[in-house]
Length: 327
Length: 118
Image 1 (cartoon, chains in turn green, red):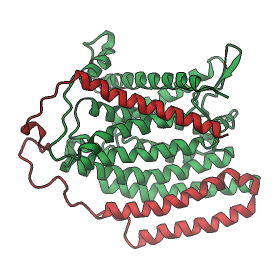
Image 2 (cartoon, one colour; image 1 turned 180 degrees about the horizontal axis):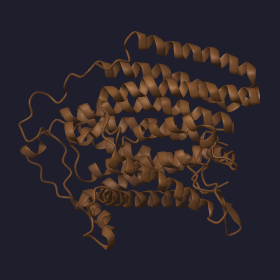
Image 3 (cartoon, one colour; image 1 turned 45 degrees about the vertical axis):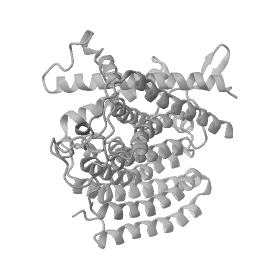
Image 4 (cartoon, helix red, strand yellow; image 1 turned 60 degrees about the vertical axis):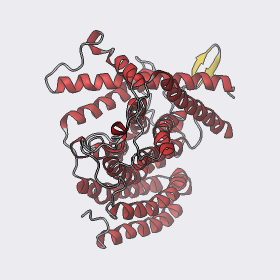
């Protein structure tokens, strides 16, 4: 098995890649939104505005860190740390490709691939609620409190349909290990066997990442910035970091569970297929942000409980009938 | 098999270390100059009215309760779906009975108007 050193190296690589992807995403998103709205987007710092991410990073680091007067200082400081930590932690089990040969021995392209991988990702996704709700509560500010309440209710509501739609895939693959689930899709991605499940999972994933049209927790037209209204400097950047890493995580999960993971025609290496599929999904996230208005809160809750949840249960039953008859 | 989970644990420590280091490094670089106006909670530039902890809609609480009920039931569904194809029809029928009760709870909450966000 692996030594601690190898895991440390892989862990460092995962963190560096995720942070680079986060930085690039912020620039590419603004650039794309610019093009969607017939303007240029950031174009002053570096070629094609690409160094904007570096400029933003430097600015976040040297900005003052303000802790409001009435805030619960310990929890206020802890909340962004919890957010980033839970976002990163999900990556401990996400594989990006089949094991590769390095120096004569196989190296898996994930930190670990435990038998309960899907559960680990779901668990850390669920824990991310704590970062958001504690942040709003500890700020002792009205906007922050309202934002965090909305976030908690939204995240737990859509988590249900997310978990239920996932069960269809698990039934078909017969395993909770992400590597096995990808291996089960080598001929046909589960997208074609679970179209309803895919739609429910993707919508829940957008809601879990709090992206438009589900960005009620930080609805800037009514709540200023929602749960992170009182945050500044590096702590604010950490919430942004958590949000973007979360977006990459759910895109990877959709890829692994429904789009066949790293399976693809042989003219590209498996890792490239994985990257391409994730990039496509991230583009869809940005595309939706450019095209869709925000939900009204009562509609959001209605949609989650009266449409998504029943549909997820129907999908589960239909898949179960098929799986039980087939067995 | 447990090895995989210890690997996860090691990565969690690396992640925690990274996050803490991130905050500690910033502390050396950023200015620190608080004064009373800067530290007031943000309320569109006005002096804040009342406390930060405002009363909120009881519905948030009810939805949280509902979530706990359903989420615990979803937990039971996970092991079942892993082995469904090996256990076949018998396990399927048992779980359908369980699911009927789950759906029944949802229908009850729906009819009672709990799911209505007023």
